Image 1 (cartoon, one colour):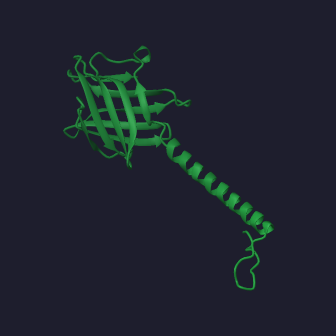
Image 2 (cartoon, one colour):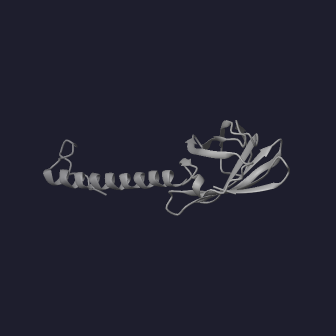
Image 3 (cartoon, helix red, strand yellow):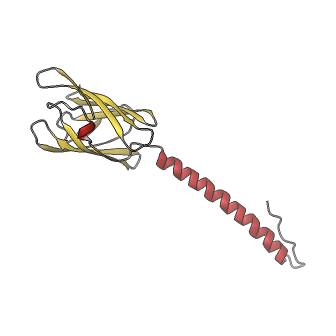
Amino acid sequence: RAKMPPVTASGTPEYTSRAWRRLGKAMKIRTMVLLSVACLAGATVFAADLQLGTWKLNEAKSKLSPAATKNTTVTYETAGDNVKVTVEGTTPDGKAFKSVWTGKYDGKDYAVTGDPLGDARSYTKVDDRTLTFSGKKDGKVAVSGKIVVAADGKSRTVTSSTTDAKGEKVSMTA
């Protein structure tokens, strides 16, 4: 802590150049410490969710069933305390769709709009790079899977399984 400068007979501080230097040095140190703490806190908040951003489907590296929906672009963004997931793609018959889900990675079902496979979805955070998910239609699981972001943060792998119109289980990797 910086020492207060000497006081004159009238009770006002006597600021000598030495006192000013000492006070200025203490303020610089305090400011640097506060800025460092703020930067670390900010970095922690933004680095906490590796899923955030826009992800594009790489069809060449994917193993998709012709009977499955194709999620060509998936965008994760913060929405207050929640995460908003927007999925754009095509259904097996070639119709474009756009679904929007807003919720938390807490394993609870949240409503989804525009999803050809369901009306509710849940995500659970397994670790910093992994999410599991489940999509439901009329309360029954229609699709489930896992999303893993690569160690370099530049790609992700989605494995999922669903039941097709014939009642057969279909697994996919994208």
